[in-house]
Length: 482
Image 1 (tube, one colour):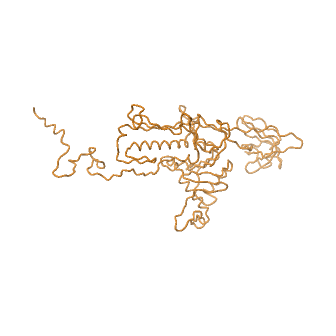
Image 2 (cartoon, rainbow, N blue to C red):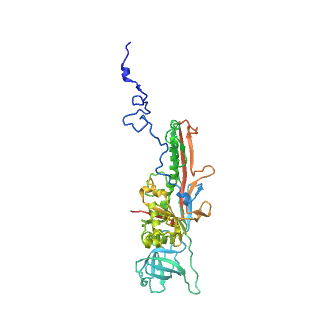
Image 3 (cartoon, rainbow, N blue to C red):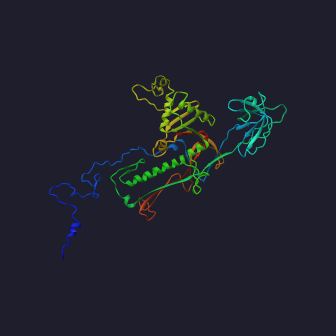
């Protein structure tokens, strides 16, 4: 039988001997075949110098911790959390219109409610420039189709409201400051019942999972794993598993900050209801200040803007201690704003912040962690979430948030009593049977789990939670529109 020499041509020897002991392309056993252009891998015959550890070029990449600093986490066992908040104590109305004759006003009231200004009460009427004080002489009439009530008065100092400088048809504001009765008359008719203002929020369910097959779980790599949670070793799946968990923990906080409820104009087929996050709560019930200015001369710029915010806080709860969580640019604006108030800085340009004991032989400290303005104390810190370029730092539309410190007193529907809670806190679902604050479990047949025939390890993560923003009128959201 003839020998087929074409076999030698089809399958030539992969190793060619050489007269001397040398590593050459013709006699080197390549790790991965060594294709064309394959010069920066193990295909080349000379072993490169390997750095086994990854370079942590982004530092600590997690952005959580904000809610742990300003609030608390408390369990609940319902699908909804409900609380009520106090309304203002005193009676006042805006959008009032002076009628012909100057002794009557139309007072705009909220739909479904009655005007609670009563006969024999004394009121202040003002258009912002002119002010008139008057006595209510008749009980207010019933609401008309525009929810306006007619209030009849007699002015004290001038003949009519119009004579006091408030024009007919002009918009005015009214508040009650007392009452006055003649001798021997009946007392006040009727009474004022406090409004019941109720708020609620619903928890959302967050999920994630990581999967690795059995073969890859048993494969050792040359890159050493080292992650933020302390995981280390040469098994690459440990890094992926750790990052999945860290990412999920950040999602738990980011969802509480960014979440929105499904609105009337939302997608009709949306299968979930959403929840109210921090930004949504402040925009709906709190204070929003746009385009906070950078440092400038005292009385203008950032300080002028900040004083405007303080005046708004005066009209609300006037909480003495507050936390400022700021983006880097806004934090520097605050530093410059405070530094500009230093006498030596303003006059000579020198940095003489005596509070820090700055000497000529030590580095200057240009950062301020806290300050007092008016009757308020503020503690300032950077919020990493607003600086991280993979999250809000990429958009740059949020400059910071002002959060009141301390607690608020609210009526808890479930307990049936008044309780004290941090203004900002997280409620998570939990009972004796199941705690859903942060659950993780393993399924499959790899990594110590033997729950199924699947040749893989599946790590599951779950949380069910919502955010309660109580007293949102004391919060301030700093936004950028530029």
